[in-house]
Amino acid sequence: MEQALWAGFVLGAGVAAGIGPISLLCVASGVRSGFRPALGVGLGAATVDGLYALAAALGAAALIAGRTATVIQVAGGLAMVAIAVRLARGGGAAGAAPSRFGQAYRISFAATLANPATIVSWVGVFAAAVPALNLTRMETATALPAGVVIGSAAWFIGLATASALAGRRMNARALRVLSYVGACAIGGFGVAAVLSGVGAV
Image 1 (cartoon, rainbow, N blue to C red):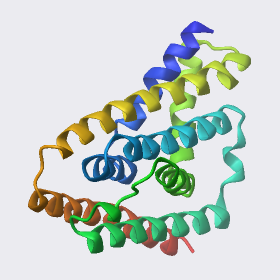
Image 2: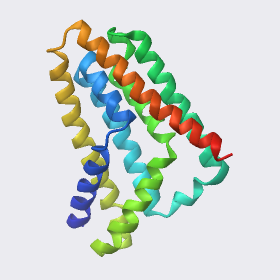
Image 3: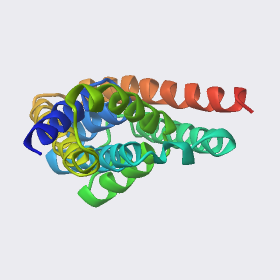
Image 4: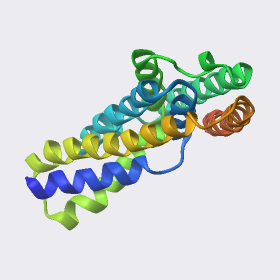
């Protein structure tokens, strides 16, 4: 059980460390609004990582397929574009990024949940990790997803802390530049998701 928990921790932290729209939103929230909103973004993503890891462990990935996956992908892409527009319009204003823990958690949870690529990635990770670790079905369905949540959360806690500390040292102009760069990157992810989903129809 301990091996499964540690394996999940490493997998969760490793997947969370990838540069994506939620990581960028976490950084933007931390720099502009402080630690708590950035933590909310990170924990929202970590929760979904754990849920999708559990779904992958239980073989539920097949539930998200075909037209359902396409609809979810387009909706998730549009949500990311909306977040990007809000960041771009807000410029350096603190209100442009999520400014409260609960708000940040809900936005991050919904945006991560609406990304079918997340569950696909966890299916691939589990397909490679579980046989190599020789885990039992119980360990795969309990300790491994729990470790994923803890590892993902640990990464985002570090990212939230670093971005909040960096935000204290940035002037208004630097905040505006960061807002526009983050908005472009998040918007790019969203447009790519929408185009990919529409192309699959």
